[in-house]
Amino acid sequence: MPGEHFVVPPHWEWYILGYFFFAGISGGSYVLGTMLRLWGDARDATTSRAAFLISFPTLLICPILLTLDLGQPLRFWHFLINDSGGGLAFKSWSPMSLGAWALLVFGVFSVVMFLAALTERDSIRFRRLQPAASFVAATAGRVFMVVGAIFGLFVAAYTGVLLAVSNQPVWSDTWALGGLFLASALSGSAASVLLATRNRSEAMATDRKLIEADRYFILLELALIVLFLATLGGVLSKVLSGGWIILWVVVLVGTLVPLGLHWRASRIRATIPPVGTAAADISLLAPVLVLLGVLALRAVVIFSAQA
Amino acid sequence: MAQAVGFFTDTTLCIGCKACEVACKEWNQLPNNPLEFRDSYDNTGQLDHANWRHVRFIESTTTSPDKPIAWSMMSDVCKHCANASCLEVCPTDAIIRTEFDTVFIQQDVCNGCRDCISACPYGVIGFNSTSGTAQKCTFCYDRLQNNLKPACATACPTQSIKFGPLDELRQTAATRLATLKAQGVSQAQIYGDKEYGGLHAFFLITEKPEAYALPSAQSAVLPSRNNFPGYLTATITAILAGLAGLIAFRRRGEAPTTPSPSPGAGTGGSSPSPARGGGQGGGT
Image 1 (tube, helix red, strand yellow):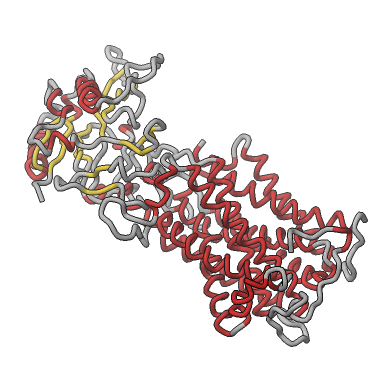
Image 2: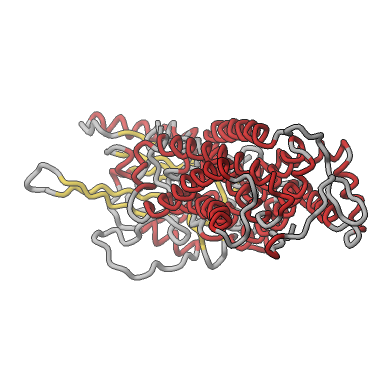
């Protein structure tokens, strides 16, 4: 049950919105890349490589945004090292503390997979990165990849839990945010990978799989949006009033329209539409709308609670 | 550890003189408030980085024709909770419990993440954009270390703010409550005996806690309550998403191949073909 608190807003704004967005895309892309390698076939190699190539650059943006948001940016390392008592600053019950560590650890997995993916593309130019690719190709590499995916899931989801572990109205009144941000991040990641591979004929077969996966992720996201709103109780009006409705419309357009387009694409898309055709434009439209919806969802959750 | 200390603020004795606010600002060298007009004698507004004491003026209408408006005054301050929400979430351990059992933000450790601000259910902590840190009442930690009373309690002319060992203050509060009840003030109650494990700054109030911007005992809950349900929902979502991936990405009649590097490009048996339309697709 929502409790009546008298909290003042922490003024987490644009940097945090950007951080939540890119953390979701980074973690989600890594997870998609891993799933494609574990459960896919040879034809999925191009797309899984694209997923890993997306994961690390988007992850790099995250600590930059986080640090810029701090009141004392040069003390960013206080998240990791206890400056007063010595030792590590690690609190398992504080999502912000866990998240700082998860970003660091996930960075190791993400960069190794990024380097391996670079080598796969051009092994002569990146021959010095061969050890990374060889490691990933081995059995131990698969274990490494899966452990990384667990951290990727955490990075994509914990931002929602971080908001909930507060006493801020809206955020602390629901338990759905972690799941909601994860489902939305996976959907956004599928959209990012689709955009990255949309002009590549060798990714055609995987595009269909990604579209199918994105349909499931969007359905999951829609279910969690309903749960999120249903758990807000007395503070529901805070997220559904005034200008926030516009953002909700973007969220709905970013879920329902791609869902319809994906459904249509799964029925008719036996071949790749030539670039410049109406069908190709539609394949561009759906991922772009999904990404806008992912951004709008985070914006409405972050900003409406602090208004 | 030194003796646990506390504030007992008896709102029935507060006359709204704001001597506590002034003493606090003077001792702690807090900046002036910007000049603005409010529709109230309360020209401080709220506790924040520059106001570590705030005298609330709670104005309510009555049924008496002689006194249509009733005022309650309360000198508000950080509650120095036994189970403090701010201390719980602080990721840098900048917020600590002192030897006096009070809650203190180390200014040289705080990196200004503001997680504590979203956690404090009393809206006590403010962000100082000049120092880039979160700030609140220190319980005059420097004065305590030198055996001095906090500035606010020293300045209070009516002894509405009492300072002392926590155990003694609770006895004083219980005696005062009994006296008021005997005098017919039936709505009098102590706020801070149970909330958040017991507040080190607790109050005698004569209206519902919410009227003083204090969460009720039922609402006085810690942020960590949402850890388990939050992560559980995320875990269930992850499992469902994994199943979705398994269904969508499963091999369809082809042998699984993990791409291994081979000279001259080629990834797992799928030779890269030229990008159609000239696009490189996100650097893949």
